[in-house]
Image 1 (spheres, helix red, strand yellow):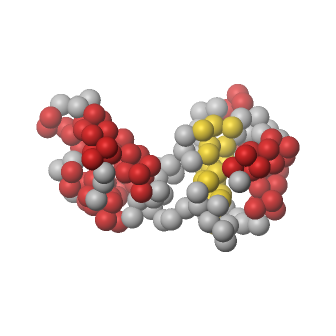
Image 2: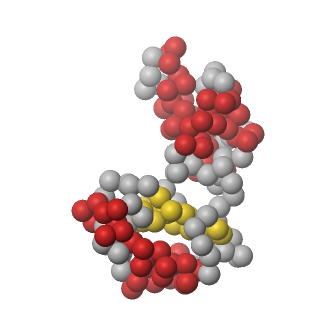
Image 3: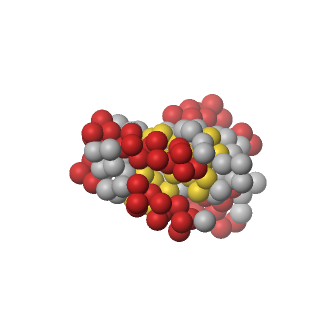
Length: 157
């Protein structure tokens, strides 16, 4: 279900914990699986759970609790905008409206061409650089303005 490269990376995650606690690597394992597959289909979550010798429901609990995991297909560019209070006070709501208008979608939706998915995110710990977003869970963009958003979208084409 996963490539040998991904399994080797998961093994590195497992090695961080005592042998009898390998299920502690579930967050890292799900991240690695999602990076390879694009999103976490049920079969992928079940595979990770089996690989970690844990009940599938426990892996699903993690995959559905945290907003960095996608249990539905997403666009090639997932933009997660923080809309918590510090970001909102610094203009995140205006940035959200700009993104929605520019992309023609709302939160939780994907553009028809499959290029962009827009998600609303919880605090990402960068309040001093608000408003901010994450691109594909790995690249943080801070102090957003409509102009910076337009530049980002142009780069992601």
